[in-house]
Amino acid sequence: MTTTIKVGMLGLGTVGCGVVARLTQAAAKIERMQGFRLQLATIAVNHLNAPRPVQLPLGTRLTDSIEAVVSDPTIQLVIEVMGTLTTAEHAIEQALCHGKSVVTANKDLIATAGPRLVALAQQHGCDLYYEASVAGGIPILRTLTDSYATDTIQEVAGIINGTANYILSAMTTTGQSYAQALAAAQRAGYAEADPTNDVGGLDATYKLIILSQFAFGQRLTVEQVAPTGITRVTAAACQAAAQSGWQIKLLAQAQRHGHQLYCRVAPVAVGNAKPLSRVAGVQNGVAITSQAIGRSLYTGPGAGGAATANSVLNDVIVAASHLLAGTRGRAFNRNQANLSVANLSGQPQAYLLFSHLPVTVLATYADEERFSLKALSATSYQTSTLTAVQCRRLQATGAITAIPIAGSVAWSAQSQPQVVSATHVAI
Image (cartoon, rainbow, N blue to C red; front, side, top):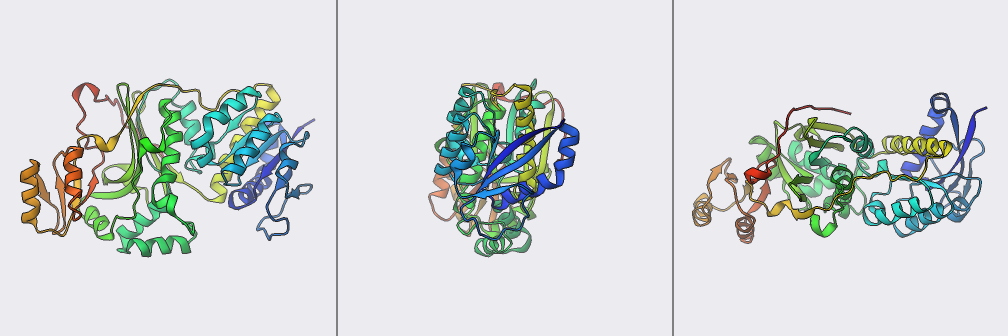
């Protein structure tokens, strides 16, 4: 006889509707492949009578009470897709305290309160999974946990915010201004009405915090990452960079050198020869460099109901399997380290400069600061290696924009990693 596991869900927005649709479509396959049935018993929503684009499974009931889901003794597993912070945190706490495993897509919450929630889950012998919190359509967290279990990761670099990538891609290919590209993203449903977290780099920072824990065992803070957004990047800079062999991307980076971890979220010039440069529009991409595998790239949709719901349901299947096997309570990520953290922007590296200043003025700056300058166009230039202090002095003029060039950091010889192979994997 097939075992039925009752599941409760908090939220029925884009991702929640995607979960309902995917579960309905995949129900027979899940039962056939996993040997159990998932029954979506109750869904907590804000508005019971709001129109919804999905038909609920037979027997699923709606409630406007979160408590009715998290405290129901018949519900064994809870999916949280509300997208809030305080309310979601309290709901997850209550579910865990009632002995229910939890699956969430809430990157903001995991980045800010993850360690405490993980400890609470272990205290109550429950699972807490959050694969969908980073690059929704790419199973990057489980890949880091499973496929790199015996490997040593040296670098993670990701385009992990679809809104910012869409805007930068549009400015590059069409010449739209930042404001025009943002408006187009909003009309297409790729940007929120308030896009501050996306265009300011905070969303990518939260995702990098989670990625760093899985890749290096090191927890980062927003202050350490100190994100720089894309609001000051111009279409002219994007197009000039593209004409000279680079794509400007909002890049989330973490690199380990010895016992030091360097991190950054900022607009970076990625060379056209690098696979990450070809991740365009709302797509996401995560590049990993490790000792054994070498360089790998994982790409896919970073958001959207279907893609994110697929990651959520995969977590649900794992949690349900553990429930039946009596093996709940192991942390999703068990990688732990104690590294010193510094910002990658503080390291010497090369830059693309964009300025309408006369070339003679820029040449004078270069002579005074003792670096070389290569003209790429009438308003764009490539520098030799600059220190962070030199770069700050240039930008302090108010007339020069500096974009770091990916892969140009002048590391000391003893900290330079050895990469043994090059492999590109697309998902």
